[in-house]
Length: 194
Image 1 (tube, helix red, strand yellow):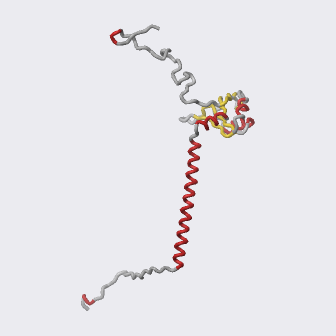
Image 2 (cartoon, rainbow, N blue to C red):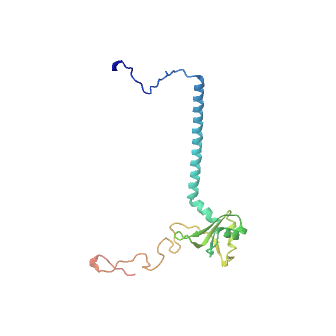
Image 3 (cartoon, rainbow, N blue to C red):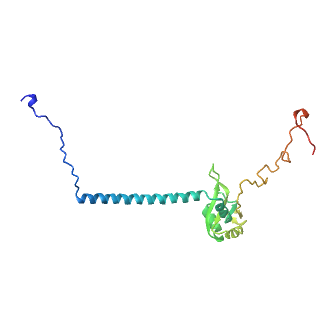
């Protein structure tokens, strides 16, 4: 046999069957079932996403309370001073539980060291319980006399000493305007007596 008469060698030839446009009814039914299942899963995922968005909005709202919310919480809270540094919120809750239902006990700590500052806030369920808690002023807790007062609400821009957020009379000229030093008439500054 000559080279030209040899049959060509085939390596891994795959024969393809003709594709028909006629699909059996069973295949259409399976595709429809899969499509419906995928649609149902997409709807389920969309409803879960909506729930997550609602939950996120609630968390953000609780993290950043409005001024009205802060005032409402402050109206049903008390400041507790002279708290022992080793006290726990559970111990304070036990001390104030006779006053009424407690929502939260917060012991403030230094942000750099993490050590307690020696005071706390107790938030009650109702503003009427605050008067009961104030009755525990100078009560003995862990060997110390507690200072219990209603919690005050801070007003932004209002300093307790100055009245308008100013220096409040700490040194300086008391009239609010300090005249420049007297350089004579040529400098353009005049001096008026008081």
